[in-house]
Amino acid sequence: MSPEEIGLCGCWQVVALRRESLDLCRPDAAPTMETGYYVSSLSVSSYGDAGIAALVRNHWSAIENGTHYRRDVTLGEDACRVKDRNAAAALASLRNLANGIYELERERKRTTVDTFKSWLAQQTFSSAWLQLKR
Image (tube, rainbow, N blue to C red):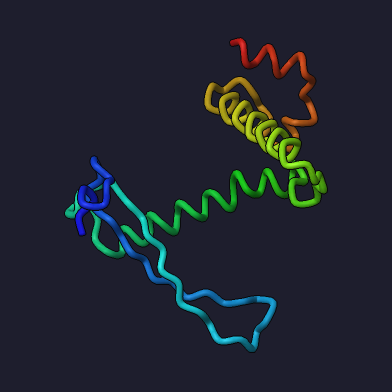
């Protein structure tokens, strides 16, 4: 099927990627096979199979080692026990906002700290608000 046939206009290809998963909590369990589906605006001739696999792997590696690490470890998201759905959504939005401001400050060369945790330690509401207004 083409991307247009499934309602994804502007995409050049749909990629099905099979991967083997291991349950690390049950080392004796047999591996399971999963299929992930991805859409891309890259032309079919841009990357071969190995290139597409590398792009997907690098994408997920950057997410797990970047944003998720910051949210889970630095901001303690996994340890948060807020039960109210709206409060949890508000906290997630605030974590995303903090992460976004930090990334903007790094991109614009407005901070000299090298870690998110160090940057957070320097922040007050007033300083964050001023950074947003710049």
